[in-house]
Amino acid sequence: MSRFRQLELSRIRTVSIKSRKSKVTPGAFAKVVNARSADLKDFVESLPRILAAEELREVVDDIAGARRRMKPVILMLGAHVIKVGLSPIVIDLVKRGVVTHVAMNSAAAIHDVETAMWGKTSEDVAVNIVDGKFGMSKETGDFINKALVKGFSESSDGYGEALAKKLIALRAKNRNVSILVSCFDRKVPVTVHAAIGTDIVHQQATMDGAATGEMSFRDFKVMAHSVKDLRGGGVVLNIGSAVILPEVFLKALTVARNLGYKAQGFTTANFDMIRHYRPQVNVVERPTRNQGRGYHFTGHHEIMVPLLAAMIKLKLS
Image 1: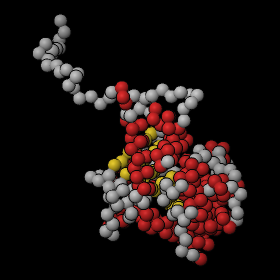
Image 2 (image 1 turned 30 degrees about the horizontal axis):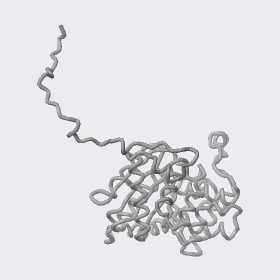
Image 3 (image 1 turned 60 degrees about the vertical axis):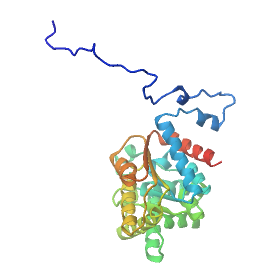
Image 4 (image 1 turned 30 degrees about the vertical axis):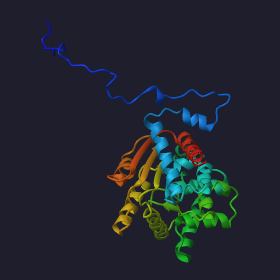
């Protein structure tokens, strides 16, 4: 005999499955595509209409709707997006008028500049840090730090503008894959948000804290100007920034609302390989509380971003 008493189930009341509320039916299942004849539309339609696949469709619908209604689509990028080769995807969305503002952390700007100027980026940190060479590429530090000092003293440009102008002036060999240049050419705001001490260019003698801080501050105000238009629509996408851009966005949104702009009722989505606290609360949850919708998609950027972009283009076509 067991020492523990068991609950008797003989009086359990059952219900018919025919009347039970259920969330999944075969109509929502994935569809098998014909590998010989399938196109992009077939593939997208083959995705199940369940959970993240259906939510991704909803975000794409909101992006397409935002552009048709001339609402902002703000794209916030971490450095990894550029490191895994997605600049052409971002540039295409800029050229098509889908993205109305690109914000990036300063590590992303470094990768963009290095690729545009010298056709290589993403050094081997584990190898170079052993003898103190990590982050000591002279050309990178000189290019960025001197561009910021010049912009600080000679113009009202922000961080992103200053770098884009220099890349154009020097006719950077690979400027066709520069997000900075592409945004500047199409008059799309491109802002760079630095945290002093976090980037390789801050280690070098050409670093000017006053210039770096002021140029990034100017870009913060440009970002706030874009955020103020998230009234009754618009989309903010955060792709691969775990700390800097979620914090910048939350403060820019606060500034806009404090000044009386009704920046509410928009959509946000966070894309990253793992779930982090700040993107979850500062992008997905807090900004859309009571009004709007927030989404989180977990997956590798090199797969998720091309899929998202392809679905947007399909929807807009």
